[in-house]
Image: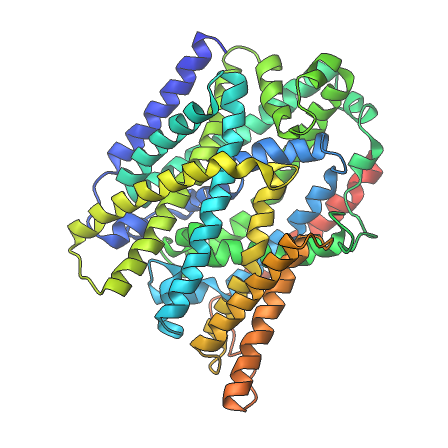
Length: 519
């Protein structure tokens, strides 16, 4: 990097501070954590995608597709679950949560069950989200180490300090507006990587000629996820459906954006937009990975710079060696934006959950001014905790993107099950719900620690099913009565939303299935 690149990076950091300063005035908890429910659905849609399509995707998805042993375009089958998950959320989860008017989605569980259930599930969220965000921050340190020469600890401080300031002072408005800008930068960065890599290779056909044909396979019909990470179609589809439905609907970091929407109509627009836009963005990531991977295969000097046990270094090293002046700085900014988006979202959502928990348990009454002040300090606390955890986040799985989904798969299935029970089951009580959550998470942790060969995508389904079965078993044992079927479906799901998302699911399936034939 040269002076121009550094100027671009520091100008971006100052701009983020400016956003936090501009939105520094909040009047109450709704204003701080939900943006007063005045944010436009377009910005919220970009914010939802920026939080999930983060530095992890920008760096690690291309590495999985283009370089990781056993990797390839199989990752695209993960996207099949997105439109189905959005449809599920529109039908079963988010309209009820939005209508309840809560700040924390776990407030809803306290109203439905009791305080213990609320604190238990919010504790699970705080553990999983802090670890998952730590992995995202770890990803961006790879970029700063390789491109700017910053030590690991200084990289964390650089990203963390700026994000802590603008998210703590600016609240949800600063987070969402910052995310919207950052999402556009992320897309630009992926396009730039693909374009530059293809230019150095000599074109799209040269990329295909130098790519292992196994990496071009998109759907693994024969893999059932029973003997390791085979990325088979069935575990990717069903496990991905549970994971995404739980992540976008029951994880405070994402659901908080849905709660911030002005109306059910805006909520519907957000989910449909995410359901439609995710696939082309992920496809862009994947093809940039193929292009850079082909460049690694044809350039021994490039390959020699990537540690054999750190395939995630592929994109940062590519940026350092192949990007022209100015574009290097913009790409570093894009990846910093991705990490900062994830961290700011985590800080705001963790602060919302933990502060609401504290107020409920302590039974304290805070004035609006006191509430906002405490929210900022709690956000700073969670930022420090998350940054600390990032120092140990690189050893969970072969690539970062696998690590973050592996962590989430421990918890997402049971959490989704409890929310469904809270909305639809009138018979299941607090004890049964808490027991189902603990058993579901416990079984998944056992599968992880025991070294089971079962593909971790199945953990989502297993945790979901076990949580439901245990909750109903406890309920049946205590009441000796059969539980009724699910209550009537939530109002507000339009026929157009169903048609659009189902059609998009079919389109993604056909596109993924036909890609190998095109090659």
